[in-house]
Length: 449
Image 1: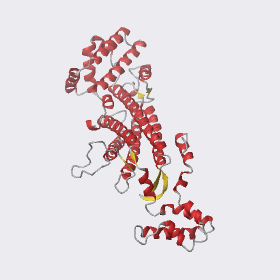
Image 2: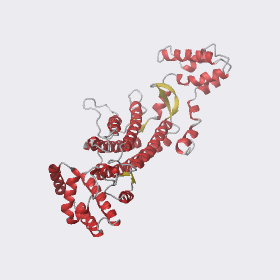
Image 3: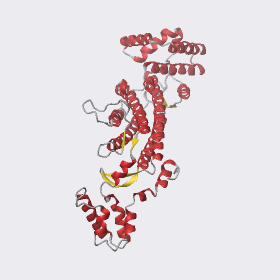
Image 4: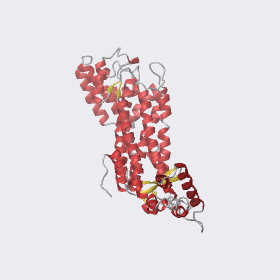
């Protein structure tokens, strides 16, 4: 991922230094396990640990260049690292990597890195949830117009809109926790995964100390269905980000103006039009969501490897693993900050509810007529006729409000009391179940209005 969309802590997980540190940890743990089971001298395992730890602690650009130099000759990244490690450890290095294959190191390391990345993403999700919860309770009773097909429907609560996104991100957190558990897998089983040259207890030893579980059947690689599920989870989270971003982008439109991104002092919206206040953050989130989702298809295609292993997945994962996690980390951090500072305009929301002359209350008027004894078909016909009369003449000199048109309709006059029609036009009726809805989402209704 380009530096513009990269946060340092997540980037560090995918750095060569961190990768080599994990590689060494796997090798050292395997050596210690073999020493415990009598396959390697304990003194040798201790030397590997001490000298290797010291070398990794002092790891510099010169060491990185040396590994790259070896790889340029060997054309093999794991062998290049092991050769460098042997230069640091000395004769005891002959006990490193005994009976193991490169995939034992590469796949187990990738699991560790994905777990590290996931822990950051879970923290990011907590920040998003915290921001959404705070704003949802702040605007629990803020009435706004609900829209279906982009058209005014009936009033709702702006807080409830945010509560819906909160519930979605709660589900995404659960999904990501499950994906973390599935990806936290270790494979130290040797060539084609038969443990022919390894005691299976070595794998158990390494897995336990790395906080992983041993892969039941690794063939020679960890099966990529785990990784496919992981990246599909990231894709679903990205889609949740885009859904919320798209909502805000619409609400910031000039003709809507119900909410907008915080506009910083000194910020410029356009090089040509000084008045512009553009939804650049949410547009950016929409684009980042596309990038994160783009990792799902190649991850799914990585599942079908040849026989016990091939490396067609390798080039894919070298790209999608850092890019998708770095991109999602940035997007979630941006989203939590955006929601915390989102500028909300309740007065504009109230004005928009009534901007169509009250026709958004047609559903409740329909029910009122049915309760008064009209058939549903007749009630619908009468209400729609008056709603269309209001809508088509809206803003003209002869235009009347929906309430005025209803009062003049001979099929309604005398059959439905005026106070019943007035009650049907009250937006606050759409808040009567708000406590129940909040209890379903948050486990509590919060303070009363």
